[in-house]
Length: 189
Image 1 (spheres, helix red, strand yellow):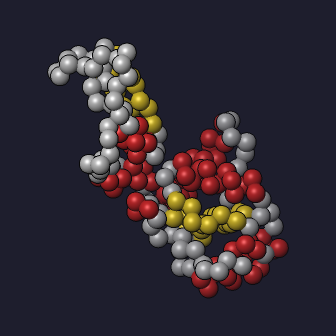
Image 2 (cartoon, one colour):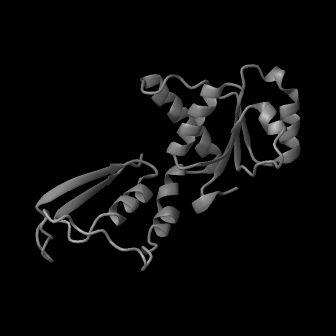
Image 3 (tube, helix red, strand yellow):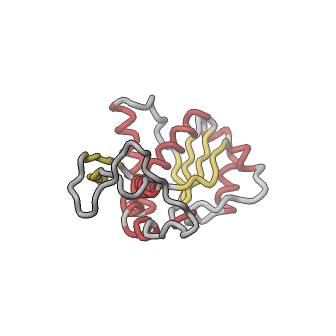
């Protein structure tokens, strides 16, 4: 199932709060929407089964939750990834390797995730700012750039997956005539 902007939606089930948090952060980093994140009991008590295109399940002991597996099989046809490695502490080499393994598993099920920020989302970025929006004005101490002039300063904007929409939002909030040139670097493996 797709969420906003056509992005795949994932459900996260773990009986470890920290694991849920790290899985949610890692999936968001590659542009996936999380439609459910909770422990097995929360999913079993959920009023309406979440429409996920993929389920990530990591439990301390899978034998402790036999009803969960029956519930998943009865309510979804989406792939279910069981037994993911516990996420190590962020920032280290082990965490980076864990993220790469997770990305590989996600791509096996959902296809190339780097395309999430290419065609579909970039086409959506072409939406114009509403005519009712008033563009910001330059502060009095900044002299507006003359048309066709060379920028006085060059700013480098860098982003990884998820970047184009954040960069567009940033640029939409800049006043016209800013005497600055931009170089945009987009990280794509």
